[in-house]
Length: 142
Image (cartoon, rainbow, N blue to C red; front, side, top):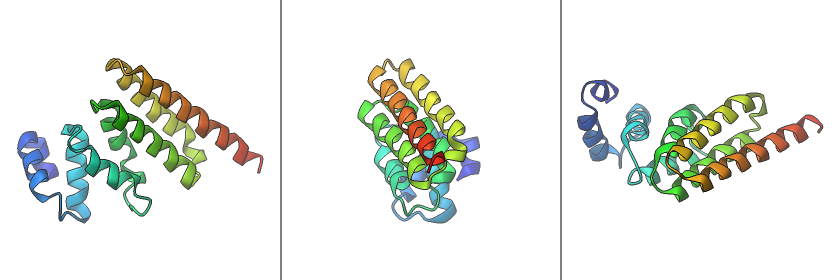
């Protein structure tokens, strides 16, 4: 499906819709890539479930793609869910050594939300960054 995405994004999207229910492994990875690149509010529940599920083996590997969709979904509630899920990932996995990268990711989400005039989600991103930073500093002192 990744190859189809390069040649025919709308065709790849149609195929993703047809196969999302039973997708596993590389097919699921391809569907997530397609939805993060070309999806929106309708695809949010599928993407969010796969990202926010702590048992997901691909959660950490598709943070950037998930953040891209988080920055562009129309529904501010979805954007805030995404911001929270990214911050929770950092906190749960104690990825404080990667904090700078995650702050960059959330700052990009914030910038994307501001382009959509979603100041509430941009402020929510700032709060998530602050929370991650405070926990990172406190973990250094533990």
